[in-house]
Image (cartoon, rainbow, N blue to C red; front, side, top):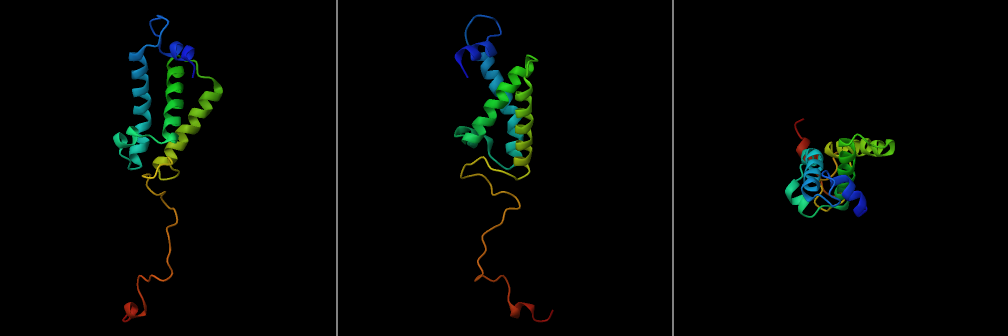
Length: 130
């Protein structure tokens, strides 16, 4: 993202500079759109956003960019396609598939756990009487 593009996307009053208020509102809007997917996965949004994993930063950036272009009704076909793929990825993530790549990410639902053949949950004695 160049400074020129950032000015173009945030300079609502045509002053030729980045409008920090507009930028903050746009970022807040993107975060508000993405947050529900992450929270449905059981993540603490505030803790996560304090030190976001690279995957989350990537998705938030692309979502922010799509949202700004969408508000201006000028989303290119490839940007829309990428947004649709990101939305599907977030939906899958919320359902327990995929990972943001950080150590605190809950284990994927349905993932195979560690198995130790020497640890028995029950044995022959437990089955007596059945």
